[in-house]
Length: 397
Image 1: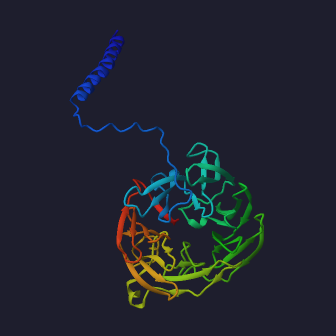
Image 2: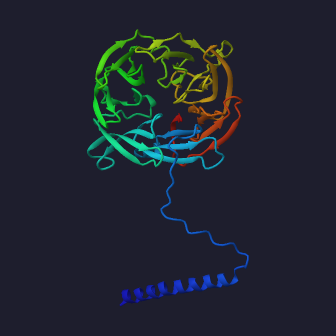
Image 3: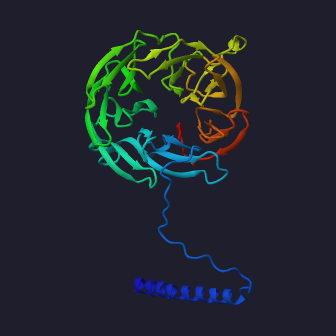
């Protein structure tokens, strides 16, 4: 009886509320001023927009590792020149994903790992191909289930042979590379890399990797992805005294690696074997006593003519990932410091757009993006990407 009575009351209330609402609405309509503007047209649902197939040079990719929910990493597309509506879209990158944008095709590539029960179960690794305009996945290539899962590293996944071949770093903890034919959507094979890690495209169709003894091994590939030849350099990295960051910046065909102590090591990867060029110390003598040294995650970037390095004062052993308070601008031709840019909230990772004008973009200690004029050092704007964002790697378009 009680249940029936309560149901009757709910039914009566349900009938009464709409009538009351209609009455209120009618009263409001009667009192509406004659000059009240017309109502906005009804918006179509769903409402979906597309991005251009070729992005403007002021757009960047921010790889959000999402430390608060590592399964949900993503790639954010951001216009750093816009005063508002900077966020343009995103694609999923999974747990500690790998990412490369295509510069020749309207495609984006991510290496991802999936578990059948989300947090456990059968593992599937795949290279996912996204359409740049719709940001929808258009295809995938299933990989051997051994993809390297680390805090996001640009050189754990690279492209070579005119973007035809994808190179995916593996770690089991044995290191190797899975070779993928992207247009054919198929795995070509696997190349062991004992004692070596990370991928640096070399020559027309090849790659180099850094090894534990401070040398590099280069593999040139046949068209079918098999190894045509291999060659090892003499050790040129002092792993114990002054190791190199594996993050690098390319400028006019030369790749630049900063060292923990403030050297720049140039390497030319344009030929069939790496050409290790003369290194140079960029911390001026008058600043040596202040222990300035590179520090952060993605610590180096390049414009068309200059290098940019995140720098930390009073650096010490083990502080190379802590981030810095300044960005130093270097002239690679004169091999000297040109100017210094003070960071308002510190810096961890940087990139420089190839737009006109260019923009220096810095992931700060609050995990938002600070945008600077790279010539004057003026702070132009701050872009907040949302709660929980960790944009550890930035890619200029």
